[in-house]
Length: 232
Image (cartoon, rainbow, N blue to C red; front, side):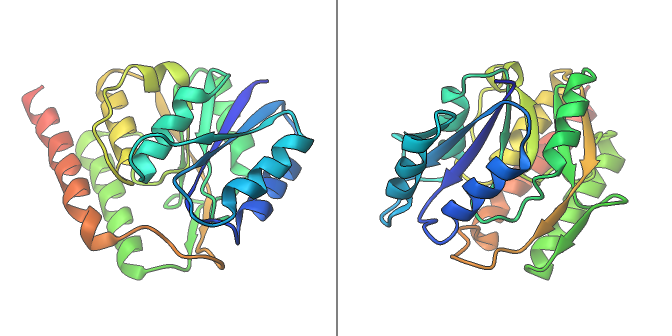
């Protein structure tokens, strides 16, 4: 196997069958699919277990840490069997065709390949305009202020070499983990790039992303990154 795909899933019974089928259809390269059950109380785990019985590259792992996206993702990273990992959202919002381009960049020598919605060829379709403005502003401004090699630092759809994850002391408790890892990796000297991707709002299920609740954590990382540059 060349690649690990991590799918954090909390109460995704409406989507998980489709996302597994689409990942398996889209990826022609050898890979494993690690679905992290994040304390779901619906049939998510049972559905994934059914797939795991049929396909030896699909595994269900349980998040033994407190529930939340960051802990589910950390659990997934700790259980992968390859040196390259990419989180994919269980709500079918990510464009799976981007994975091939990401892997090409990793094979070229990059440590992180970021899916970017805010460059030519990328797009953000649907969803909250406020969230879209926020993620675009954060990404573009840090790109301008820090020379960060991505315009979409907040996007969770990124491919990592495993040694990047292992080098970082992750503090995040929520979705801001997708911003914390690449920011800290950038300052550690890891090589990062971006590829365009198209994001689409979920059509089934309920999003767990709460803008007002998570904003302070994103702001803290934003200010940390700027301060880090000022003291260098």
